[in-house]
Amino acid sequence: MRCIATLLALLTVSACATTSAVDTSSGPPGSACIKGSIPNLAAFYGAGTQASIQIREIDGSPVKPEGWRSHCFSPGKHQIGFLADSANQYEGFRVADYVDLDFAASGKYVLRGNFEGINLVLHVLDVSTSTETVTQELKFKVSSNVNAPPVMIPVPITVHH
Image (cartoon, rainbow, N blue to C red):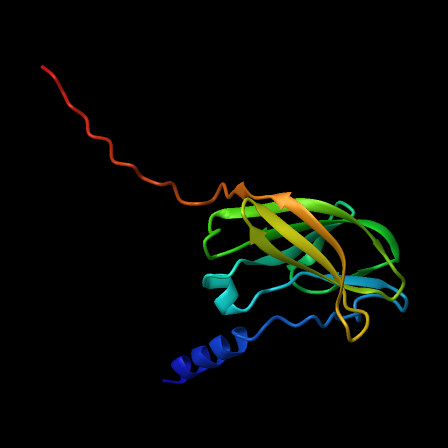
């Protein structure tokens, strides 16, 4: 019974929209920081088109821990490697790509995306103030996930003697 209550509590919390709070504790004062985003459960598993965005690399170096946590670095131009995927109608498809961004000193940024047609529309949000501002909107073509299970198609075979 305790497990069920814990699971329900986790689902309730997860159903809330993802927060745009960026943790700046991993960098020195003046650092720019960025994080990915996790859509709420209804948007991720339901009919929504929101993508789960994970930061995987900064300037060609893998980040640890990879995923949705904040990563801080010196201000200026940086290449961010990200992974976007979804569990809804885009299940089995993902985008793994790079985006070149210019970061302001003490800037706080979030990558958020939506799948639209055959594209991921990636929004770079500046969340340094109480008002989220879209600084860039970029499109990336969705590709097939090589780890998706194969689709079995029965083919009738006729044997002639």
